[in-house]
Every structure is written in C-alpha cells, then in structure tokens.
Length: 52
Image (tube, rainbow, N blue to C red; front, side, top):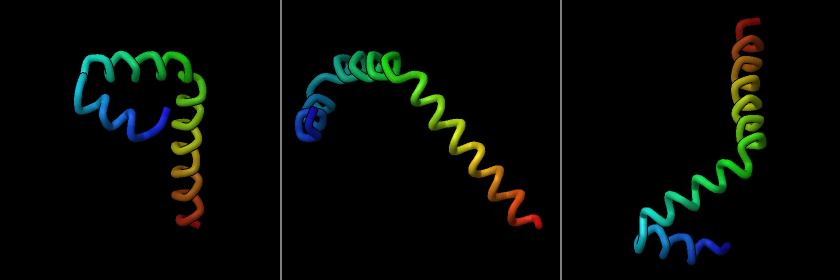
C-alpha cells in the first residue's frame, strides 16, 4: 500500500482504518513484540553502559 492511499483512507473512514490496523497488528504481532523487546533491551544496555 502506498502512503497516499493510507492518508486518504485515514481522512475518509476512520473505522475502516482502525480495522486495517487491527489486521496488521494481528498478522505481525510477533515481529512487533520482538521490536519492542529489542528497543527495551537496547535502552537497558545503554543505561548499564553509561553507569560504568
């Protein structure tokens, strides 16, 4: 999907956009969770590194 389409959709029909987001999150749930974990661990690693 291109950004122009998504921008128009967001303006036109928020409910449709919400459903689309929900489907995306369900489909890519594991990847999204891994990204969150990675960010969390990087932040903690940086904090520990700065303390030393």
